Amino acid sequence: MGSYHLKMHDTKSAKPKVSVIIPTYNSARYLPDAIESIFSQTFQDFEIIVVDDGSIDNTKGILSDYLNKYPDKIKYLYKENGGCASARNYGLKKAKGMYINFLDSDDVFLPCKLEVQTKLLYEHPEVGFVYSNSIHFNEKDKREYLFEAVKPDKEVYLAEKLFTDLRLDIATALFRKECFEVAGNFDEEMRWNEDTDILLRIAINFKAYFFPEPTSKYRIHPDGKSRDWENLMKGVLYSSEKVLKSYPDFAAKLGSKGPKIIAGLKYQIAKTCIKKGKYNEARIYLESSLKIFPKNTCKIIYSLLCINSVLSLLCVFAIDYLANALTLLMRIKPKGG
Image (cartoon, rainbow, N blue to C red; front, side, top):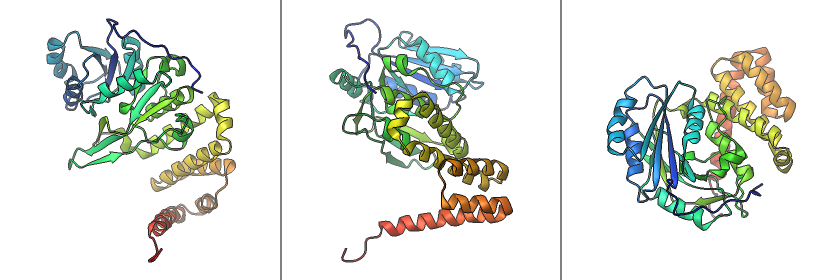
C-alpha cells in the first residue's frame, strides 16, 4: 500500500495544473452554480470538462455563454447516457491536468479549494490525494451542517478506515493523475457508490492527506441518488466484495473485520427489503448474512420471515427502536458521574 513513486511535476508546464471534471445529466438548473464556484476560485490554473451524459434538458444551452466567454478554460463533451461512472471516465480520458478533481453538477466548491489543495500536494509528494470535510446543505430550507469525513491513521493510510466508514465526499478530494493509472478508472457497472468504490481502491494504493477545513458543499435535494438507500447499500456491498477479492493482501490485513462488514451490509439490505415488502429478496440476503457471520437479531428476523412476513416487519421496527433507545441511554451520563 502506498508504495508507488509519485512524480514531481514541472510547475512551468503549459498544460493546466488541475482538471475539474463535471459529469451532468439533466441538471441544467444546478450547473451554473457548479461552474461559477470554479471560476470564483482563488487559484485559476485549471480546465473545466463538462461531460453531458445524454441530457435531454437545456444543458448545452446553459453552457453556451461559458463556452463563448472562456473557450480556453471550459470544454463541453456529449455522450450517450451510460451513468455517472462512464461520464467521469470519459472526462478522465480527455483531462490534461496533473491533478484531477470531480465535481457533481449539483454541488459547489468553496473559494480557496484548489489553491489550498494544490499547495498541499506540492508540499507532500508522498501522498496520492488530499481531501477534507464538507458542508451539506438542504436545498429546501437552506440549512447547512458540517459533514465530517473519515480520517486516515497515523501513517496517513485511509483504506482500512474507509472500508468500514464511507464518510468522504469525492468533491473534496484532489488527486494526482497517477492515482487512476494505478487504481484504474470508475467501475461502469456501478450506478450507485461508484465514487466510494474508486476512493477505496485509490486509498489501498496511495497515502492520503486530510485537511480539516471544508472545501466543497454537497446539495441535498429530492432528485439526489443518496435518497435511494437500498441501491446505495447494494452498491457498497458490490464494491466491498469486489475489493476483498481483488486485493487479497488488504483483505488479510482486515482479517475477520472484512467478512463482518459484508454480513452487516447484507443484514441492512434485508431489513430495507422487508420494509418494502420484498420478502423473498430479504430471505436471500439474511440467509447469506447468517452463513458469513451469524447474529441473534438476524436469526430472529430470518425465522419469523420464514413463518410470517408481518411478524418479521414488526420485528425489524422493534429492533430499530431498541437499538436507538440503547444508543440514547449510553449517551446520557448519570448525575455525579
